[in-house]
Image (tube, one colour):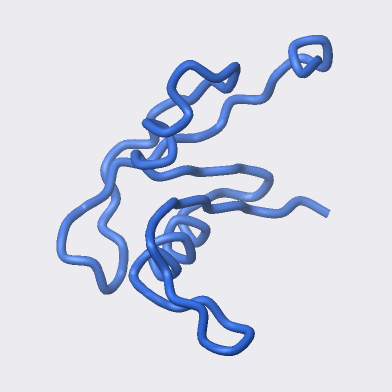
Length: 85
């Protein structure tokens, strides 16, 4: 099974067993843009991971439903198995 993943980092509120807030909505919208088998991250996440071994490629600006400004999204590039060690 191939899944799509959207990742964003931001402040959220926990209400019972649910997370809510703008950051939760952004992550859901980013996930909807991702293609099958693809992991997309927001610019926020890419910036937080600067200096890590992860590599990203731009997926351009996207207008995400319910958000006032377009967001720059990035795909997480696959790594060779030996690069993960």
